[in-house]
Length: 303
Length: 303
Image 1 (cartoon, rainbow over the protein chains, first blue to last red):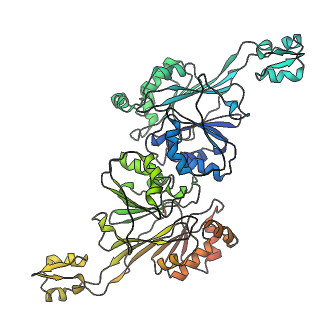
Image 2 (cartoon, rainbow over the protein chains, first blue to last red; image 1 turned 135 degrees about the vertical axis):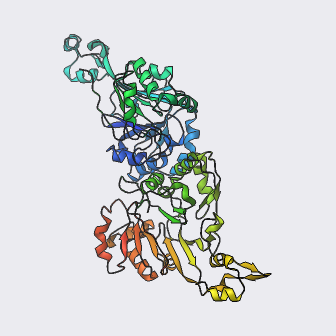
C-alpha cells in the first residue's frame, strides 16, 4: 500500500494507491498527488512500473500523474509506460499529458481486453500466467476495480513428457505454458502437465459502493484491498450518498466473496485511528486489517 | 520554507516553495506536487493563502496546484484566491484549471501592476503598506522573482496633529496611512508623520541564473530566499546550462545586494547535506543558512 487516505493527503497518509510487484515488474493502482514520494518512502522503485491502472478520474486518484511521469523521464526511463482506466481515458488524460510535457519514453493508453490482459504482452519479465482484468464498480463517475491473477500450471509429469519424446531441454518451456514442436507435431503444456493448480488472485476495488461485481471479482481472492472510507455503521447513508463503503460493508463483501484476507484503505479524515474500529467488525470477517502507508506482504502459491 | 528540493520531491524535502504570512494573511510562492501536505507538516494553514505567486511553469513548481485548489474547495473556501505568474499565465493555468474542476470559490488570475500590488486590495486584513512586486529572472522559460515589501510610515507626531485640529479618534487611521478629512480639508498622513522609516523586505528569487535584476531587488532585503541548486563551484557550468545558481553565486548575490540574511533552497538531489558546503562560502556572505522544510522566522521592524 502506497497511500491510504481519502480525498486529502495528510502528513501520515498519502492518497490511496497500491503497488503490485511480480518478477521485478509492477502495476501501480491509482496515482493521487504525492504518490511518487510515498512510493519512495515505501521503498518501491518507480521504474518497475509497467502499467498504471486508474480506478476513476477524481483528483485524489490522478493528480500525482504529471509529477510521476516527469520524474520517470528525469530518471531516464525509455521503455513504454502503459496507462489504463475506465470510460474516456484519452479525454481524462489530455490535461495531464499537456502538463507533463515531453518525456523520453512512450506513454501508451491501453484498453483492457475482455477476459484480461496477459501482462507478459507489456514486458517479457511478467510470468506467462499473470493477467489483469477490470470489473465495473459503482461510484459517482465511471469507475472500475481490478483483478490481478497469477495462474499456476498443473504439475509437470516427466513420464508423460518422455512418452511423447519431448527432449528434456524443452520441459521448462512447457512448464511455463509454451507449446513446443517435437518431431513435427505440437506438444501442448496440457499434454505433459496435470490440471491447473490454484494460483494467486489480488483484487483492488477502488472507490465504490458495495456491489455484486466487486464481490464476484473477489471470490476466493488471496487479498482484497477494499476502500472503507467511513468507519462507523451510522455513516452508511453518507457512504451511499458519496459512493463509498463502510468498514462493515467491506468486511461483508470479503466474507461473502470467501476472500482470504481483507485490507482496508481510503480512510476519511474523520477516521483518525482505523484500528480502533476493527473490533466492531471482527465478527464479520476476522482476517481484516487496516491499511497504512508502506504496508506490504508477499503472496505465495499454496504449496 | 514549505519545501526545499529541486526537480524531484523526496521523503525529506518537498519541492521548493515558501509561505509569507502577515496579519493572518499569506502568499504562497510556487506550488510543486506535495505542497499542500508540506504546508500541513509545517503547520501552515492553507486557508490563509490569498495569493499564489508562481515564478515559472516548470512542473516542479506548479503540479501541486490542482490538489491544493481542490483541497481548499473541500475545506469550503468561499473567498477568492488570486494566482499570479510570468508570461502567459492563462495558458499555463488552462490544463490545471481543467483538472481542478469546480471549486466553491473564485480563482482569479492576476497580473501584477508595475510598481507593485497593494496586498490590501486582495483582502482588507493586509496592512496598508504591504505590497508585492515582480522582477524578471533568467531561467530556461519566462520566469520572475518576487519582492514583498512592508512599508513603515514615519513616526506619528501628536503635536502636529493637534496643531491641525485632528481629533484623536482619527490619529490611528492617519498612522495606518489613510488620509482624513478634518473641517472640510484633507489631512495627509505625511502632514502628521515624520519621514517614512525602514520597513521590511523579503525577496523570493525562484529559479534563475545570478542576474542584475535579482541583485537589485534584493538590495537591503531583510531576507533573500535564493535558489542554490548546486553546491560546488565546479557545478557553475551546469548551473549556467540549466539556468540555475550555485551556493557561491547565491552568496555573492546576497553580498552585493547588501541583504541581511540569505536562505538557500531548491537543492539538487546531488546535494545530500547542504550544510556541509556552507563552510566553503562562509567568507562570501556569513549570514547564509541552508533551507529545510518547515524552516521559519519572524521579521520585525528594526526598532
